Length: 202
Image (cartoon, rainbow, N blue to C red):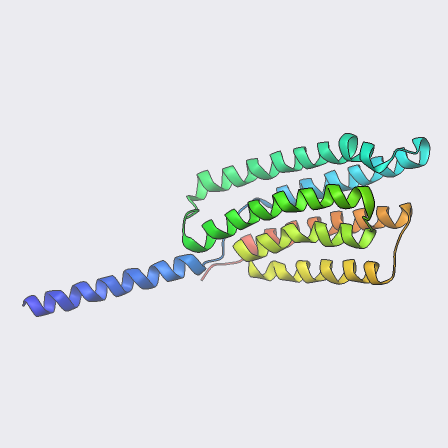
């Protein structure tokens, strides 16, 4: 009898271990699609304002960073944080499991480094290709932490960014084109997430 109880307990432990592994590998959304759409609108607005200021007032990069792109970054971060908080509160996401917790921490650290790199590059050697590559990087983290199929958008962004870079793309119009592409990439990612959320789960 004791032997049967021991075997039964062992099977329960095996089942719990399997469920834990499955839970750590499950795909789930971290933010709402509207957060991606918000980023798309903000990037388009920032691109147009920056281009107009450059053409009409010859605004330099340093000024544009402070008066155009810093507000874009702040507003986008707020929207994304609100979306993330709503997801966490409604779905009780397992934020502290090994896979997701480590990915979130790596994302935060990488964003800090990325911000410093962007500021430095913007003052000396920023190109339209690098803009696209940098704008693609956040999607990499969501593909890693959420839906793996978002790597489609990731590699599309990398391909276009490298094409711009190897072609030696420069000039205000190409910077504007890079901004429009980044905005389109965020919008497409939002649509992709929306489709993934609505698919039946089996």
